[in-house]
Image 1 (tube, rainbow, N blue to C red):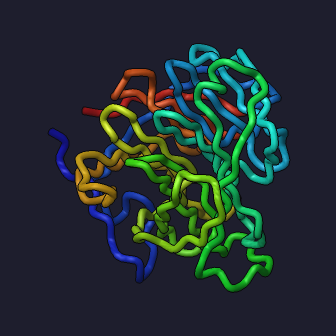
Image 2: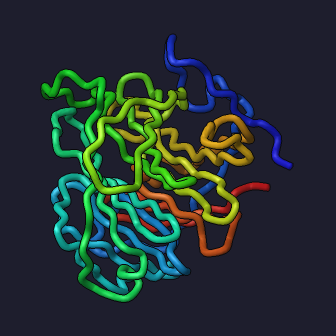
Length: 295
């Protein structure tokens, strides 16, 4: 059994760099699979569905999901999401019936049109042109929508589906504390408030949940000079109590080749491989990586 490797602190005080207050964080290395084509240079979300790997781009790109070959990163299919706009797509999540697309990127803190698109998993697997439904959200405690680059706490890039609900993890530019929001899976309009908060000492950029084990992978990085990603981390959460995701075993993994890899933006558990993660980093070109989770 894994031992507890990371103790998450409170929300106040100075922010140490990742691993600084948790000296027991282990080190891993991302192994390059392939460079992704120009069509995927802003890869930002990823998910494995029935053995097929899907990804998408982020802000301002076309409303498409792309099935890619996990062995070489080449695009196999392009799937148009009808009725959707890619304002700033950030992550993918799934339950037994649906795929959820988080259009929740909000780096400037100005957006009033945050959305999670819901599409049929069966449609995704069998059609290249599929309809969508909208789960519209707004932060209950956001009162200002002024330009706030690199300072807003109302940016979110990580989404999972668990036990009949969606859970959105914020990317907090101020103090590296993530707020976790619980959201219904039913289309509609919702005001959301934090369920709880945890200080991870990184900005969370993606999440995935293993459908069988319910282990959760969170990835992200700390910014020393704002635009320079460094000290990228992976957290594996398991054996937690209900939706208190940080109550169980928390494995902290520091990516030793962070500077080489760059800005990690997407994560997905491998097909039936509980010890493997696919991770992608945006760039020119974007790159698909794989890593093994230490036992």
